[in-house]
Each structure stands twice: as structure tokens, then as C-alpha cells.
Length: 158
Image 1 (cartoon, rainbow, N blue to C red):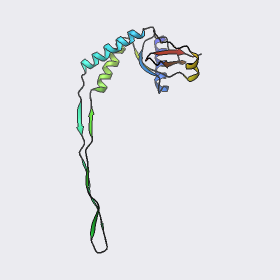
Image 2: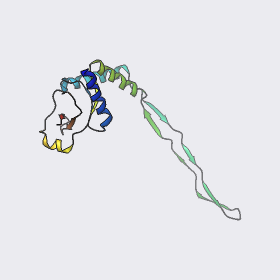
Image 3: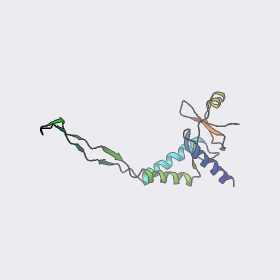
Image 4: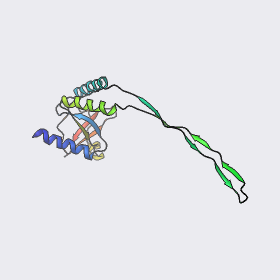
């Protein structure tokens, strides 16, 4: 029951949050363990689904000349024809699969992906700056403060 309630809170964060902190989450885990587990799963995903960088070039496009003709049938080229070079695009078709492998690895370790919204200015200005060391239980009132040194602080308002 508790896990399903947590899942609903986490899904709610994913729907309403457009900024903040995108991370994997398991309450009670230290941030250093989270980082270590995330790195291990990213390495596993990279090893299991290596990049396959592909290059595509779209064909060039020819823009024909523009002619203007007078009543006597004498035509003059107003603008010469020219080519627009084809665009070159690189992509990795394995990106989506690699991300799914990473997500499954983290799920196997008990983590769920979450999006925690940023704290409003009045909260940021009243809470003493510090870094979260252990992931707390999340509620609908949880928000995150990003610190300048790259760490973050999860705050539960109210």
C-alpha cells in the first residue's frame, strides 16, 4: 500500500513538473549511493547497448532561375538558379533502447524515475542552504533547491 501511494506521488510529480530535478528515487538511500548506482547502470546500458552513430545526408535541392518575359517574348533572368546543400544529420538509433536498459537496471535496484519541481522563491529565501545527503520520503509538497555547487536540497513545504 505504501509503495503504491509513493508511486502515485511520483507519477504526479512527473505530470506537473516541467523543471526541477529529474532523477531516480528510493527513499532512505544516500545521495552518494544513488550516484554510484546510476553510474553503474549507465555503464551497464552503454556496454549492453553500445552507440551506433549514423550519419544521414539529405539530398541537395535545386532552386531554378526566375525569368521575366516582356510582351515581345524577350526573357531576362532576374535571379539565377542555385543549389541548397543537403543537411547532414547524425543520430544514434540505440539511444531509446539504451535508456530503457538503464531504467530497468535502476528499477531492479528499487529506484523509480521522478521529477521534483523547483521550490518557489519564498521557500528558497527562507530555508538555510545545505545539500540533501539522504533521500527523504516525497510528498505532494516536496520541492527541490538547486545549489550553486551542483548539489541539491529536497524540501517539504508546510
